[in-house]
Image 1 (cartoon, rainbow, N blue to C red):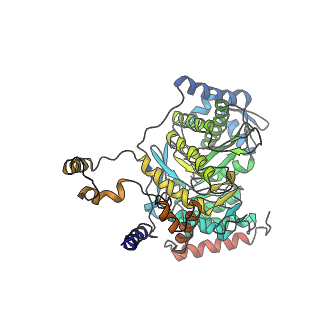
Image 2 (cartoon, one colour; image 1 turned 135 degrees about the vertical axis):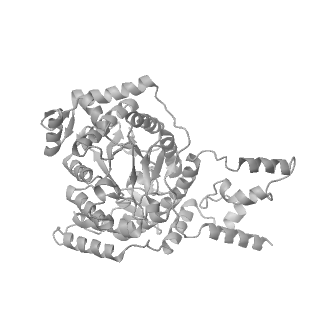
Image 3 (cartoon, rainbow, N blue to C red; image 1 turned 120 degrees about the horizontal axis):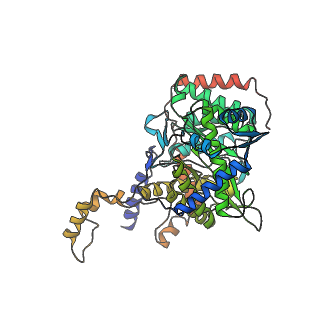
Length: 507
């Protein structure tokens, strides 16, 4: 009898964990936001940011950018730009409050801004830990596997870009193969490269092959990430890519790379003031390039350990800073990006779980619209983990359900079942329970809630082992989403043409 029960449970589990690819739509957040600043505190930080840009100034190390700022009325001295707050705010007002990212599968298009939230995977890791649990440099084959997992994960809304760096392909050609993988291994929206303006332009051309020559200027299909060199420097490379995407009508996350206490003051509120100045100056600049182009207020936020100098995630000050940044983004009426499941842990262990959860939950309360690094991040971003990717992706499904808020659709029927059962009974066999048990409460498949005996019988597997198994099982069942063979042929012709003129070096 016990074997029969286990078989039934196994069959139901197998059915629930079938590999049919599903994708959750844009999350419509219905939970309230948490505001940690009063009006006075919010204005104090905003005014501090404006004073930084007016009195100290910020470097825009790009000749065209300087000319655009000068023509707009800013005070330009060398690389340094001093931006009057009236000019700053008038430009910020041109950034749309929300926009749609069109996917090649229209059902997987998503909306950024308003009360909408989307989740993206980790980004930029040079190292990987795959099923063999060996830390090594990533390859193109590893990246393709991560792209496939992002496609197959319901609550990951965007395939990302460099979940890990494909270090076996020359840097000058790497972006071409990354974008091809994004297009062929997933039909979700994706991110674009920013390591050089010409690489950004290649991504734009490849997107035109996919969507049509005239589709892009008025239809965002990818979002990219430009980082400020904090403190207070926007360099030529980032600005070059930013201009390419803005002119093509593609949104960019304008994100200071903040290591609080190292490239900002050792103060949470002053850090936010500096970060805010860097972010809004870039947002304003994009509107000089193409007024009305959608953009995202971004940041990468970590604190530096004063004992070792290493970046830290999931701390109390980082939570408060995310809440403050959310209020500032709402003040300006612009979409806001943050970074979710961050950890400094080298492996998928208790530290990874605690730090990721403590980092992610305040971000949801802060009202972030686009949340990167929600699956796979370990070792302060240096390593993309196969196990953690699977575990994190399931956590995003749970957070998705949480953020939808209380559901009252079956309230009357549920109340009626209380009357039917009465005192001393149970609800397991009621019609209401039978109709709703699969959806009433989120049931994670990768967290083990069985008895010790059952857990032991099934191999005494750790969460990390279960994550690896789930990822490998999904990858074994992967089937590429349908795509026009003519598009793939045109992409390959474009790649061959570009590779013929690019240097074949790894650096």
